[in-house]
Image (tube, rainbow, N blue to C red; front, top):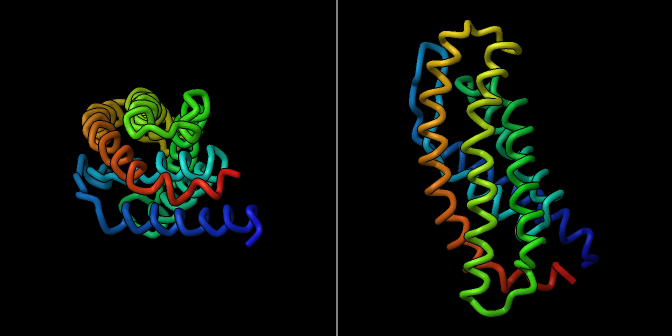
Length: 188
């Protein structure tokens, strides 16, 4: 099978995995009437996608998969555009950090783990800082939610985002350690 076709096939597969992990593996938290957040590990799959497929294809997989999950859940439908942008950016940060650290070239398990941890921490750190702020402005200016309500949502989502980031760092590294050897042929 042609390498580009393999990458496209894996991208579609990761779109589905991202969708399923968020849709069926989250714990919803209602913040205010009509506004929810969730504890989930979907960002771990976004990071994993970017490591295995590269920043662009991994970004597409995370952005499309999680935006579809938002669009098909009435609690999150208004978040789909924000989700698309944020998940794509998380994948870019993880993927380009992994490239800089030469994650795919590492052969020793401890070196692979170290580079994956650093890359995941960068991506999740980006998300912990940018997502709540971007979410605040998105809710205030795009969704026209009053500033006070947007601030309450910001506070709650910042805490949940930090918790998700910590868990997703661990999960993404463990998943990568289990899968990276199987994907080596895709890199050539």
